[in-house]
Image (tube, rainbow, N blue to C red; front, side):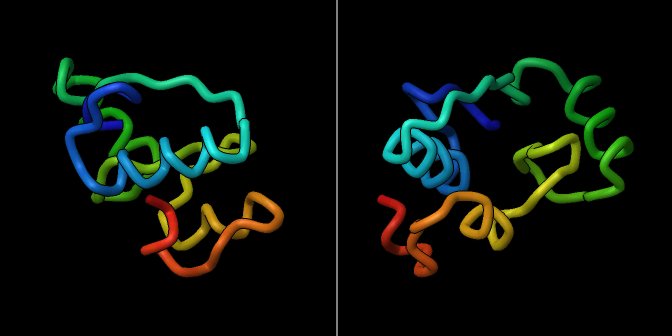
Length: 81
């Protein structure tokens, strides 16, 4: 993510953290803004130029995928807080 769960640095990170916390999902994180090498490596590994994204079951997922990963999750991104 960009930033930390306590201080997200982009709206995607903020929405994902709020959603995961709301659904009591345990998650790990790494602040991509602290290491360009890691950021570039993740982009190459995932073959996905946009950051941040979330990994679930070993695959990179985007915001539109996250709602399908948690049962009962709202489909409207504005509801994520």
